[in-house]
Image (cartoon, rainbow, N blue to C red):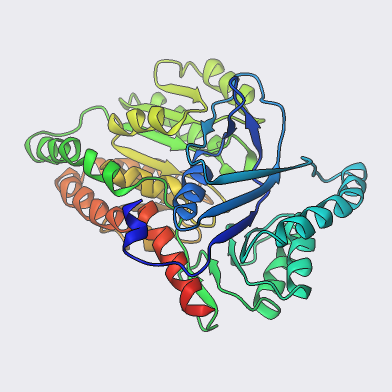
Length: 394
């Protein structure tokens, strides 16, 4: 709570509208599989006397890995979990709008500031309700800000709303120059400053080892939901090629999703079991342990706003290797703290890996550069930046 002593927040009661799915653990505590969302909202809530999060709830899925909220100043309002592309799903959304509006009406009486986490169906009526109520609102667009092929129409509409109608502060993920006065560049932190400090000894030992001896068996890690646009299939194809050429490596693929069984089958069919581990979902403590034994984070995702995983990797001294999308060049600082490849080229990553392994004299400097960058990307700095901005803006 000492961060509150550094700055007074003139707003006391915050309402957060989000589609982040929540559940309850075995003891009845509110929890979510999205540990980063949980940690970010708790950091932000530290500046408010009371915070209400309006979000969908589901029964806890079997084998799910959840993070429990620890801050007792946060209250939850449960919303139905709906969505999908079929006509039935769309009709369910329409039928649920009155439930959403009723919730907005209730919580608006308890808040002096509203935070919209976009894009999602929930915050289309959410924006218009609070807009006509003339409430003080701010927003984050957590998706890819630049338009892309096959982007949902509702996403583009929400970007149009933010550009043309939204009056409060808006945070977006972009490496372009911002010209609108109410728009601000955003990042998405996972760890706090104490955790950065906790990694210092481990990272220093890693850097010393890089200076003294070469890496003979690189360990790679890829983190994200196992779905099409995250593009883990590209990684698996690279693993297949490396194995055929007797390249010595190990690759952790962390996450869960609809393609998990398909990827497990691919590993088995191509005799990659000794080289590739599909770990399933991990909480942030378990993920930290995997980062500590990894040399490189590889993210082949096709569409990305601000990837959390590269920052997490740099916290732990892991060098990011990123597909050329969105914020990749900014995060790697054009080669100073990471590498970039093109997933459009089926051979590009494999070729880059051989190049990387021939440049081991650069590893220690890249790790140090990444650590300095990550030090500024903490939960504390993120929450402080938001609160300072809304206090100055309103």
